Amino acid sequence: MSGEDQAEARLRELLRDPRWSLPAGPDPEQRVRRAARAQRRRLAGLAGVAAAAAVIAVAIPAGVGVLGHPAGPAAHRRPATLYIYGSDVGSGANRANVVIPVNTATGTPGKPIHVGVGGTWPGGMIVITPNGKTAYVTTASGTIIPVNTATATPGKPIHIRGRNLGNRPDFIAITPDGKTAYVSHPGLRTVTPVNTATGTPGKPINIHGLFPLWDGQIVFMPGGKTGYVTTWSGTVTPINTATNAPGKPIHVGYFCCGNMAITPDGKTAYVPSGSFVNTFNTATGTPGKAAHIGGHTQGIVITSDGKTAYVTSVKGCRWESYQCTYTVTPINTATNKPGKPIHVGFSPDAFHGQIVITPDGKTAYVITTTVNGCGPQAEQCTYTVTPISTATNAPGKPIPVGFGPSNFTGGIVITPDGKTAYVTTGSGVTPINTATNTPGKPIHVGNSSTPAIAITP
Image (cartoon, rainbow, N blue to C red):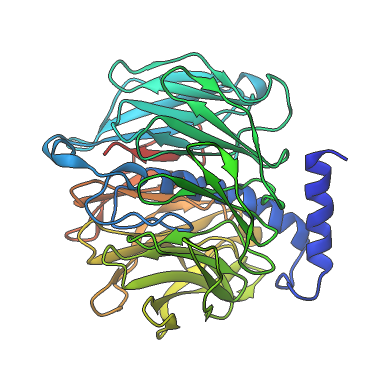
């Protein structure tokens, strides 16, 4: 049985298992698959967040750059560049993929950089190396393509375990030293290391358990000595980045959605799983006290001081409009006790949940929708971003950012100086002035309805 067949079989088994019940609604199996694909877009945004922390698996302390790496003085002396990855013109196999650089000081898009054809597919993502010199994108043709950010030129495609595997590269994470990119293959249940200096892929690393069908997130410890790979089977597998040897899987609950965050001191990992947020000691792999949140937990972010984790969750879903009540719950990391849930509106899908925090740690932002914000069958939703004061845990007025389908998760990245947040929706990329929480003019990207974004340190 192939990896994808095994994934399908495991998914069906999970949907029948009484220990994990999907909220009632039309075709739940299809909703899980669609939501998992959409989650890729959310994770794509996470990979480029230069904020105090990241969501759903990656904790990024304040004053850091891409993927949690130190930003350094230079990152704050020059304007950051936003990179938008989407499809431009054509259709099907002939649909052109482009990366568009945007000057964040002026909001001016640059010349599109062509990075192949075939469409970006729902899980396409873009990440940038810690030094900001290279961007990497996943493609529907089973490759990752490097882009030189100085010259705006694409490099030679890197084939991961063959040219025509039928298993697309799904998630990319880059070590803090920028020397190695790790690429997950969900169907094959492997992670492949790639030497960023030569573009040479190494031997695939077999990972215990089942990835989410389109998701195998990779999170690095501060310092990068260990990477963690999340799976849908409720395990997290550590990888020694010096030897690329996988360690013993850590069980973090029966079913989890690939999300994880690590405290800034590197001592504790937090993993949303069902109605709980589970923890484990990164030194020993020993599970710790779980926090009961209720509903279905999704994204998670930890403040730069490590004192509070914020987790998003949904419940009370109304499937006729594909909307769920959306909350953010603070967790005291010293006691692992959850605080009072913060009601931030609605989520258009049970697997959404991105949350980011500004570099100064003062404000968290979550993607939401308005009540009845989705049309019939959720073909189009009105999206908003809700700010939350981390000092008071009070939500602010929702910020309108555009439209998109319910299965589009969107993404948020924040500039290193914290002045602007960029949010993707089906109608483009919308900048938000974080001082006033007002939206700017949307930036459109060809025909792409679900662009991915990343930002330089």
